[in-house]
Length: 140
Image (cartoon, rainbow, N blue to C red; front, side, top):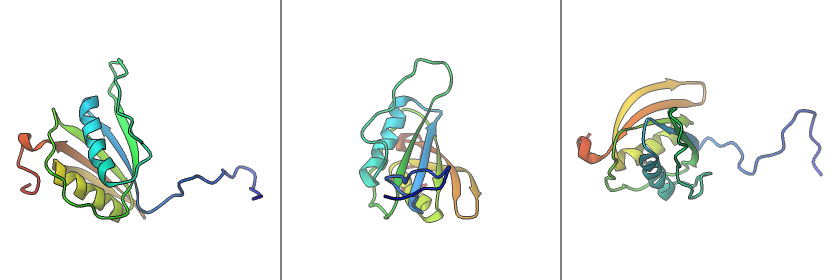
């Protein structure tokens, strides 16, 4: 049996990793959020399972979150259509965030909207659109 000091939390089944990227999607429809998460689920293990974003019926802006283990560079993804624009915030280790961003850039038109670098993490804000609303992925 492992002893813990007072206030120490039990070990998580998923220990912190430099490859873990937290993704927050907003300013979009539940269908577009689900489309983005489906693309990411095809390439990276996730804590989301297969659940789809749902409508809350509230007038306040909605956001959807998920964690993805970007421990490899994925192959190319064919362009994926979105009904509108999706705001995506990625937070994690620089290499893992870069891998996840590359997967998004192969599926969608990605516009950088800002970056904040920390000691060992980076936070990147992106705007995603489908290839019908801009240059096809790969040409941007």
